[in-house]
Image (cartoon, rainbow, N blue to C red; front, side, top):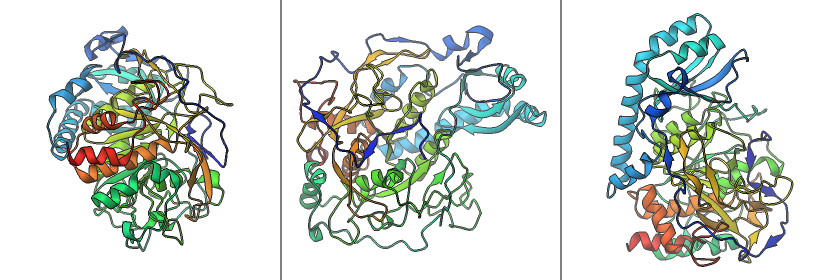
Length: 522
C-alpha cells in the first residue's frame, strides 16, 4: 500500500480529460538557475555550533532518525556537479563508474573511521541505534535520542544533520517465493512480433528493433517502486540475477550486507522478499506495470510486444527510508537506469540530501529518471512552482519527464514547471522543468497475470517509456555518459509546443528511433 505522502504517478483504469499541449507559458532563457548563490560545505559548517541542523529536527522528540554528512564531500559545492560533467567529458562510463565508486568509498571510510569508535560508545550507552555508514555520500544514518544527537554534533568533521525520511511502504502479507526457481529463456524476437500497442509504435521502438537489431541487450534497469509480481511471462525471462548470491540459503554470499539479494531487495524491511504472488487488484501492481513498460517482452499468451527495450534486464527495489542503500546496491550491481515513478511533497531541506546523492550517483554512470507528476489538476492539484516535486524536480541529474496521449495532447493532470530550488545548500532559484515528454495517457498496461487488459494514465508511465529509450541507447553504446544521453535526447526531441523549451513538454517529445540513430551516427 502506498503511503499518502508518497504518490505514485499512475491512475489505473481512469479516462482522463485532455487539453491541448499548445496552451503553454513562456520558459526561462536557459535550463540553469536564475539565482546562482551557492553555499559551500565550509560556509554551512561555520553556522551555529559548527554544524548545520535541519529545521525539521525537533529536540523535544524522544528519538529521531537522522542522516549525517561529513564536511568533506566529493561534490564539495552546490555547483560542483556541472563542473564535474565538463571535467569528465570524453570519459568512458565503465571506467568512470569504477573510479568514482572507489573514490567515494575511500572518502567515506576516511571520515567514518574517525567517528566509528565514539559512535559505538554512544550505541553501548543506548543513545544511538541503527548506525549505517553510507558511501554514496560521505556520511551515516542512525536513530538518536536528544542526548545522542548533541553528542553526534560534536563528532569530528560532522557538518550537516538532516531529519531522515520515514519508511512509507508497509510490509506485504503472503509474500514469496523471494526468487524464481526457474527463469525461462527469453523468446523475444523482433521478427516474431505480431503486433504492439499504440504507445510502443509512437515511441518508435519497433523501428529500432528491426532496423538496428537493438532490443536493450546488456542493459540493467533498476525499478524503485512497490507492487512486484516476479513470475509473470512478460517479466520473468529478463529478471536480473545477482551471480554473487546463492538464492534462498539465508547467507550473504557476496558480502555486501544484504542476504539473498538475488533479484532485488526491500531495503526498508531488510529482506530480499518483495514478490507478491497473490496480487489481483490492478491498483496494486504499480511496480509490474512500470517495469513492463520498460522491458516487457510479450503480453501473456501472445506475440504482442509491450516493452520499449524487451532485451534488457530489470531488478526491483523498495526503500524510500533507505534510498542511499538502494542506490549504492544498484551501482554495485551495474545498473544503467534507475526508474522512480513516485513523488515526495514537502521534503523541505531533506530534498538537498536526495539531490546530492543522485548527483554523485549520476557520476557513477546511472541515468536517473522520474515522471513529472500528476498534480496539475484533480484532487491532488498543487500550485506552481510545486507541481513537480522530489525527485523529478532535481536539475541535471534527474530526467523529469511529462507526456502526451495518443492524440498528441497534454492531459490536464500532467505536472508542469518551473520548479524552485531555495534550500540552505542549493540556491538555484527558478529552474526549467520538465526535461522531456513521452507517453502518459490512456496506455494499455499489464494486469497481474501479464495480460494487456488494463488501461492507465499518469506520469508513472512517462518515466518508464524514457527508461526504455535510454536502455536502447545504452545497448547501442554502453559507454555513453548520463549527461551525453541527456544531450542526445535534447538534440533529437521533437518540439511539440512553442518553439524551444516550454513548461509542459520540456525540450519536446523524445522517441527511441531518432535517439538511437544519433548514438550510432554521432
